[in-house]
Length: 228
Image 1 (spheres, rainbow, N blue to C red):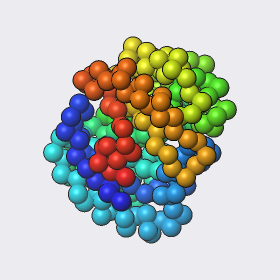
Image 2: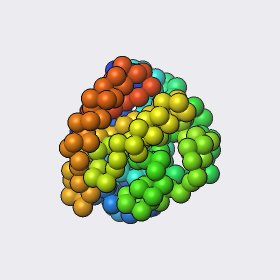
Image 3: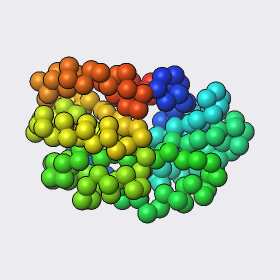
Image 4: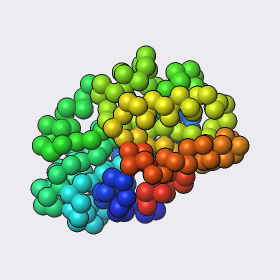
């Protein structure tokens, strides 16, 4: 598994994929990333230390992702990231947190003392599909509840059961109301959720223009950011 990469386009940054403790939610029906979780803190810390040594500070921006939320990183790893921020002159951090942590984001900002850009996995703004099918556990009324706390939603496209109308609405929301967004094209994994090839083809054709939108990053493969 590759755990370090450099992203040069749209939102230049270094990115690291770290190991975390078990996801506090851990019920998403589409997610197999939690297989990277561990309860062995010594193992977690040793691996994460090695990955973080690769950070150079080339763009002064570092994105840290893991198989849960930033809040599931160990205390040692948090301290190591803070050291990297100081030593490499990192001026902005990018983290992902589950919507359940919306009222705790300031803790992270206060800890690192640099601007923090927060992503959150919404998957879709369709309430029923998000929580009844995907079991995301992100309960809110509309996009404004997300916009209030987070800078960038992560949207998932190409799942059986999704509709074109649902995706059109999601794309309309992220383009009109958020600074940035990540769109993940679903890839079949070990879960029961399945990819809809026709929907992926339709999306790829209709929203091809988004490849030139500097605010929106589209991942056609899980590893398009160079990690995973």
